[in-house]
Length: 131
Image (tube, rainbow, N blue to C red; front, side, top):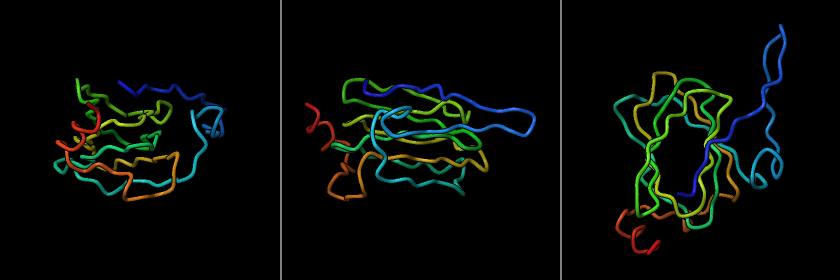
């Protein structure tokens, strides 16, 4: 499975906490795009796609959600529910996001600029591509 959880270093004192992410240092790639997902609902799932070359790191800035990750051979479930634990998702990984808590906010850092041709949005096509 081409994913891993990244434990992010927290800096802080009585004034609050801070986490810093740097492309090529704390992240396994140089960041080309950042976006965030918010106003999600617990009973509406998202994702249902894979990327051919794109790598991502996802951080639950607030709240929680579950990722279902699939490499074409097996599926694993991962919860994101802390801002100091990020989820790295590598190439050719099908992802589904579900069970969003109210107020969940996800920040996504991507290795490439947006390119619709990079997406595999059909699960059967994904299975063909990874075999």
